[in-house]
Image (tube, rainbow, N blue to C red; front, side):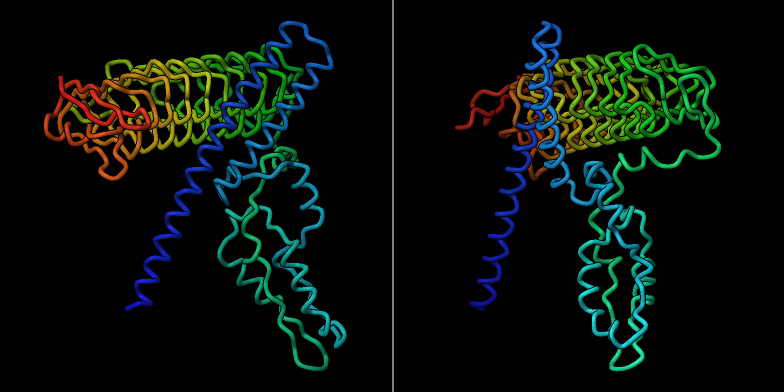
Length: 448
């Protein structure tokens, strides 16, 4: 019994330590996001004021250092997800030294057998698969079947397969963007085209109009380019992953035909405002760490509901889609969005105006956490669920529920204080905070 109690106490302590570490990491990421936005604003101000070349160069260097720190934080947080990508210089070095995980050489002599064990440890430490997320389970089995040393004398020594040991590294975007151009790609003016897909922009930047007939914008098509304004023609249905990542784009026109804006498509861009079509599915971190001040997701013509009050939402806002947009002040979510994803607008510190129209059914956990300037919110008819801590760590003191029976997560309530309890008792209506806790967050709520 004593051993059992000790084990329970040890597990509880480990869980508490893990929770503390997670909270500290989240706070660090938030601080870095804010610093990144402030540093970018300083650089732009210096360029506008015609500051000295030395001053501008210094600010650029500091900004790059901030970006690297933010990227390392994100990599540590996401672990082995596809968003975890090393810098291109590291990837190229690794690619040149990596040993293929499925074709280790088999020693052919007794002397080779005696050195099989050191070779095993070296391969395990240097071999890196090109895309761990796509490596089939059979890969490690294949490596195991070919990794057995076969000396002519003495006892055979079996080398440990390396494919299953090197699973933490994923294929970085930088290495993929310089891959061999498919034979099907043709050059038309400033564009490389693969059928109706815009494969890569190769122009000098500035204002760009994508030609008619294009149906999709490919991965990395405009990333790190000098484009400042882009007009996307009607007929384009998808904007690919990382399509405009870290470009100098400040203005973009997106037609209603677009139904997919994939992960990281506009990450770290200089867009000040964006209007998104009503049916677009917005991917993970699609606009993360950008300079956005205003976001509008358009209404669907004819309303956002089907017959019988069933939500007709086709659009959605993905996980962390606008995370760390520290300059964002206004968000309008139209009547055709069904889901506001986890952490979608987290760490948007300057958000003061939020409009959510009927059509949304699910506001997921942490969706608006740390929106420190937001003081009120209206939850429209049709919302059926609000996730854990969705509106915590902010300044909200007034909440209006237009509907009764919303499922508010019990553990890690969406709002601070006793609002969940009061809503379950009082149903639809407007609730205001009357008392605050020691940290300045609402503790006691009252229905008006």
